[in-house]
Amino acid sequence: MNVDPCLAAYGILAATTAPYLLARHSAIEETPGLGVATWLLAAGSVIVSWIAAGVSLVHHPGVVAQTVGVVVLGGLTARFGWAWIVTWRTIRSRRGRHAQAAVLLGRRDPDLDAVVVDSPEPMVYCLPDSRGGTVVVTTGARTALSPPELRAVLSHERAHLEGHHHLLIGLGQIIARALPVLVLFREVGRQVPRLLEMCADDTAARLHGRLTVAAAIATMSTRATPAAGLGAGGPAATLRALRLTTPAAKGWRDRATLAATLFCLATGPYLASLPPCPHPW
Image 1 (cartoon, one colour):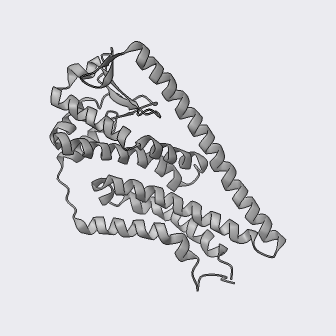
Image 2: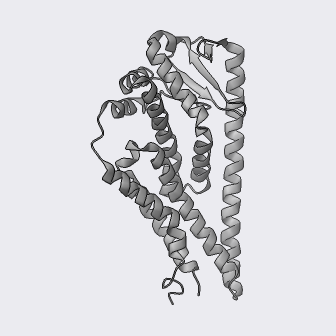
Image 3: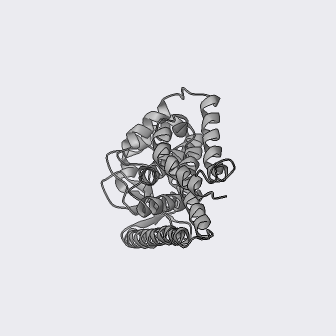
């Protein structure tokens, strides 16, 4: 029995419907960690189904089917290999140059456990690296933020570093760059960083209070975070501050629905290969 038509059809169906269904799921912002897993699994489910379809075609007795399978597997490997190399080189270059500049222009503050850079712009962000990363604080941020707000923002940045959020963001960028023609893959590149900022917000809020974190990130919302780093500020900070100050209206039912969606995406390629789906002609 041939499972490749069903696997290919599942991949197409998931790639076209998942972004619209997930965009309407309110529980994603209530549980952003689960939301990150759902978006990444949606893209991963599509990729796995198409790889499995390619492998199935390669094992067909016909030359045409085998050729199509080789083209599918080779095309996916080439696109994702290229996307990984370009993304890795770009991120490494940006972060390396920015980290060197921050160390040269700034000064280490042991009380903050951060590098302080002279700048009137209120910015606090982190630069991940293999040694644990660096948190950068501008003098404008020290002036604009109260001591509790500054501590809250520092907790936000350390949540990024300790959670290795840059790796998940890099994965999302690879997926988006590999197949940008698909709305699902483009949305993964956009949604994963946004939701990880909410994860860091929630970590800081548990330590310093939701209102303190909301006030801090709202203060820094006028200035975008440098492309090399992860930070609490930026244009989306106002919406994140509103999220922290607005009580969650949904309950366990929405979270259970999101968990069920996560399960369906994780098992989708396997379910698509089960009878009676194979060999529809």
